[in-house]
Amino acid sequence: MDNQVNTEKYLQSILEKTYDAQRGYSNAAEVSEHVQLKRWFAQQGARRTQYAASIAGEMKGMHETPKFDGSFQGDLHRNWTNIKAALSNNKDEIALEECLRSEKSTIQEYNKVLEHREELPPTIVSILEAQKDEIQTTVNKIKRLEDVAEHLND
Picture 1 (cartoon, rainbow, N blue to C red):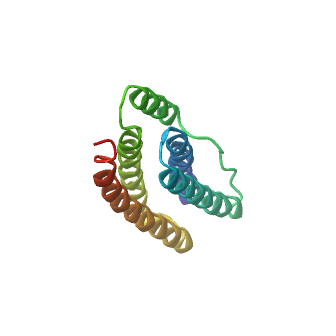
Picture 2: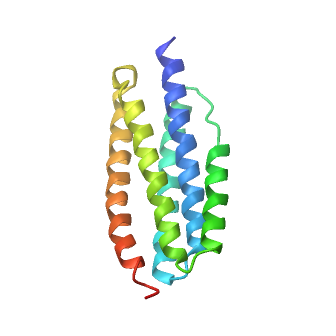
């Protein structure tokens, strides 16, 4: 397969995950019961929108047409989060758990794509590594927030 085709495929898979994450954070902001957490979820969603714009811009620069949509799996995950939150006494903890699960999956996707770094332009590798590092920082933050959320309804 041609490197250009591979690059498009890899970037599209990341783009799809990024849209799923953006929508997941938006959903978490709706489910959350605390103003500061709602704000943080919204900020994370906005950051994922920036990630998507960066990746889509790179694709357009390669004369490729990005698909601006998430996945069916992401839709199911958001619906599952809503069901769990509706049945829970601690909606914030549920939202954080599901965001954590999603972000860990996203990091795995980035790692999978970055295994093929020799097929990717250096600028794209740099963008993906920076985004992956930020997502890892977010994972660490979610873990700390989960510890706090566990005790919010005590």
